[in-house]
Picture 1 (cartoon, one colour):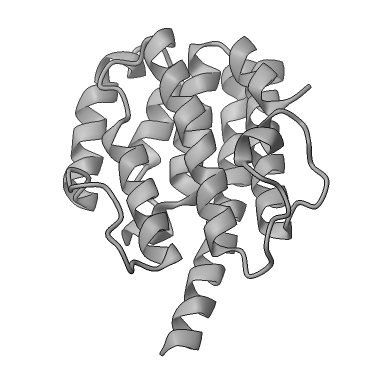
Picture 2: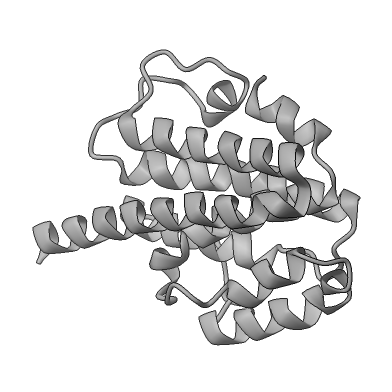
Length: 193
């Protein structure tokens, strides 16, 4: 099943976890620590957490400065564009955890996270767009984009198959992806410095 199909079939918890996992893997671009999104993850475990989602989200935005301006200026690097995409993921997270709201957010986060990985991958992705990747056309995918696509699919499958019990392994998948992206960003910084 393609990523687009999985997002289309996911329930509210799965969609929120999918969007949150994409954002979590991109936290290194925002300067956040590994625990910054933990309250949002914890809120996905129970239905009462849906009521507190907006408040927890605002706290995270305050800590990460998630209300900046977006739009890349001419001459900005691919890393600058990646940071803007990550900030947009945080800024557009819905204050209310409704199925319709988190479906649109999860879909946008999926695209943004794949674009971020494509921008930062030292090897070029042969595909025309990340949309083709999300629809299952994976020929010529660069390694970083392929790994991100696998993580997105795994998170959705875990939540679809296990419900709330799939949150812990989904968080582990996200943590692994965050470490990978942190290493990529660090390597790029060393090359520039």
